[in-house]
Length: 68
Image 1 (cartoon, rainbow, N blue to C red):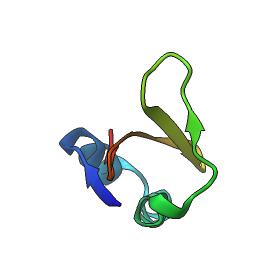
Image 2 (cartoon, rainbow, N blue to C red; image 1 turned 180 degrees about the vertical axis):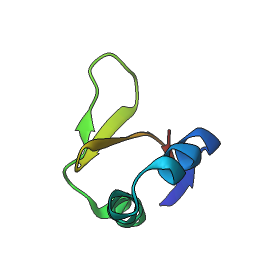
Image 3 (spheres, rainbow, N blue to C red; image 1 turned 90 degrees about the horizontal axis):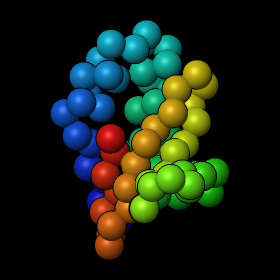
Image 4 (cartoon, rainbow, N blue to C red; image 1 turned 90 degrees about the vertical axis):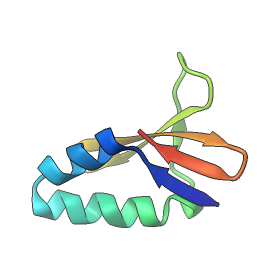
């Protein structure tokens, strides 16, 4: 699977503290293999993954995971 990160998510990641930033980056790199992704009820193809105090929001379309 391919993982794409949009510009807004990159800006948010840059603002986060370095300790959390490293955890979030590691989780994004292994996102295709993480079973703890929860589907959001009010959205189509929207999922979330919790990393510490943060949530990673993503859409899965075909073979691409898009991080928002």
